[in-house]
Length: 121
Image 1: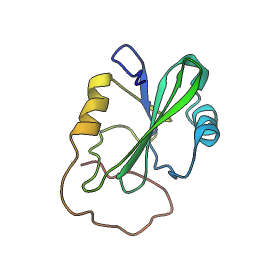
Image 2: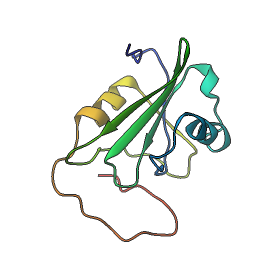
Image 3: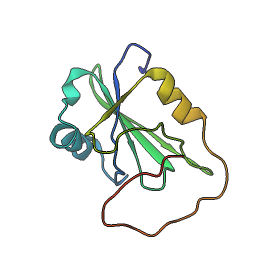
Image 4: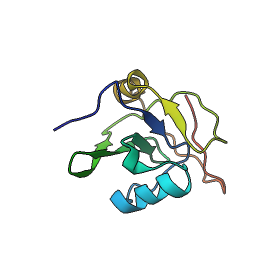
């Protein structure tokens, strides 16, 4: 059952994530890089470099749950945020805007840079 709602706290990880990561490796990112605890019931949002795949990790009754969304076309439109932060707090409304407000069009692949960063539209 889907247990995400407006009363939860949401945190967007500000760097691209390898979408092959699963429960325990994403939990490690939360603890070591975001300096948060997945056991607190907060919701953690991860997006890949191309902004085409999103994973949401959340502790629900009975265990960890990953919600995984992969776009067929277009890219997620992320809110502006300070990339120097370890996590960016967002609200339920912001998450729904990211999920629903997909920017259509062709993806333009850019050269890889040594430091990972998102391009905010």
